Length: 230
Ligand code: NAP
Image 1: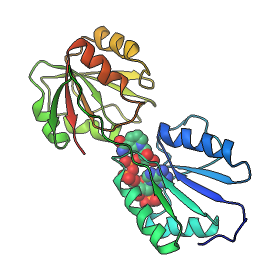
Image 2: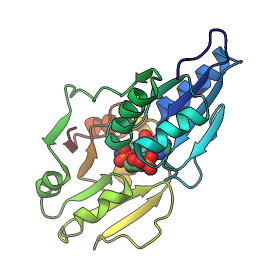
Image 3: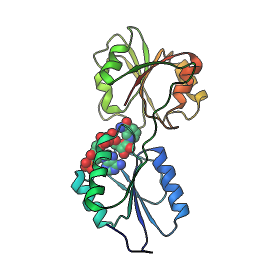
Image 4: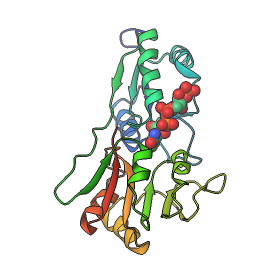
């Protein structure tokens, strides 16, 4: 919906990432007259506090998002979601087309391999599962919805880190559960990797700063990372 000149702006940020939180902070500071709304999927029970307004939960597909844009008179939409969150990004493109609201896509670049990185690059989580050797002790750095896929690897010990306690016991046969957010420095992640005698990390190539500390820690310890590409 095109906005009238000088009308207050309403900016909708599709969020759920640290970059989206930073953007909300920046927009609120730079545009005190604008309404800044961050949209979260509602997967995390106690999300970090965000600048501006927050709404939570799915919109109900493309039509639902378009309706929200019209109802809230959104003048600009920013897709700052996680690069593996493909459905909401596809919906944003379609809803922007339907409503005529400009869409700014800010998807992170993938991490690039650096000297000292030992990456086993695979396409897809099934390939990651097959790449693990028997007897490995694995930091499974994946969203809870992907954990069950590794249940058939009874010959591997998994360490799973989750922000919220799982609603049901994890399906993994041999595992330890750590509750908390990822460490933000390589030193913190190194301590975790050593404390659990980790031999491998499985993660997706998300890009960005927030999850990179474990990659640096693996490099310093010479540990292989099974890196799932986009
Ligand atoms: P997805 O597969 O692209 O989205 C599935 C559905 O969840 C969407 O169709 C939408 O429901 C709803 N949804 C997703 N993101 C939303 C948002 N920001 N606001 C409102 N509704 C949203 O997404 P996902 O991979 O499940 O990720 C969900 C959220 O977690 C995203 O916000 C993403 O930035 C964040 N996140 C994802 C990952 C990851 O690895 N995928 C990692 C870290 C953070 P409706 O169709 O009903 O609107």
